[in-house]
Length: 125
Image (cartoon, rainbow, N blue to C red; front, side):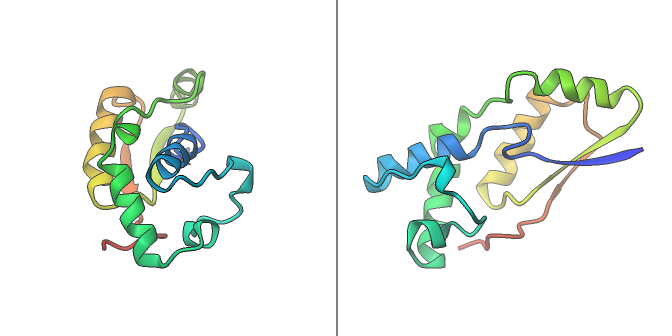
């Protein structure tokens, strides 16, 4: 069977580090529990351009560079891989694409068949 798996908040805790970066950058604190939409401009009360600027800054930051798989994620993927083809699907874009490819090579290289970047929620700004 072919299985598509979202990367963020499934394999990797992206939102915690993103919200830490957001707080450092803006001084505003947002809890993970307050996120109800993938359109962060609605949460951050900013324009789409400002949201893209924050996301680009996050992708360029050490917060993004230091993302780690959730505990147990790699073991679970290994079990799934035994009888299936695994594909990663993510909406990451821009600088996040290159860094994500590197992250996957370093952490999941033997587990996934391919990665698909949808850029669904964001536009290069």
